[in-house]
Image (cartoon, rainbow over all chains, first blue to last red):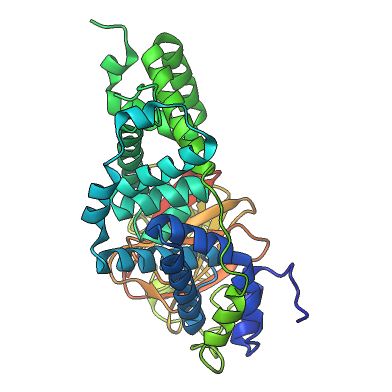
Length: 189
Length: 246
């Protein structure tokens, strides 16, 4: 398939809206990795994350006519990804089950020197202790380095609210990391 | 009394500043303030270090790839035909010079019928002696806003927001707004009341962001309420102005 890979997202959306269905494949290729990874970090289940990512792209295609180009395309589909993930989490009543299952690590285990992969796993587990909305916010800010303004769009809140929620969520995550021995400094009161 | 800056100013505020330092969104003044505090308070330094570690650990989370046939599966699952709303024009458009008929009446002749510059009426007397005049605009947030009516003949109002400009012009369906946003900045629009626009999803809780561009944005506002425009550069608020429309 011959396709301009240097076209902007907005240009490709226009091509789709003009009837070029295949153009949407460029958008999928361009964003599938980040969408899948955000869903994966939210859901902690590869199969569920892939299914969620697929649903996001299909929904994006169906609603492409309502996409407003003054927003970044990726912010628009992140918004859908976060909503899709949160709906799935609510649907499977995951939060309390995960909290219980994630708290079984012993301090002895967490205080041992950890290899990088273990640290990543533990960080992922620590994230799962956050409520899903905070987890999504932290992920998009730190994992995807999304600016406050885009976060405001994704979560449909003013920037001040983004800052305030981020402030609380980061503080909470630091506490979790300290308790789990991931962050031994303990500088945060 | 403790010399600790945390005791003087409140731990939450320092915590917020530390987090903003990690995000790289501190103003110059805040940087200086925090730098001084850090040099006096080892606890604050440790706190900053924790947030940096957290940020680094989050950034180091593994990146996984979806299945190799992911794109094909998505494409195969797409509904047939063009996406819904395909016939609608995109909202971001280059500057379209307005040729819409102007309204009639006293206010429309002077300022445009839908732009009520609440601050402007005392200046009406000046119209008799000046074709170009300046009004004080009641800046809602900043209290320091100013705006200029460039011509009573055209019914056009220019509202500068830092280096950005909103140009208001009455049209048949409402108030046309042409936004000129400097490259590298973002102009954020929020509304109160029932102001709306076909081109943009304007809501008080969700600002519409216009990215800086060589081209201007054009939208038509309907309804009444207050439009607030805030100019951002590098995630820092540069200027903010509000205008009441009825």
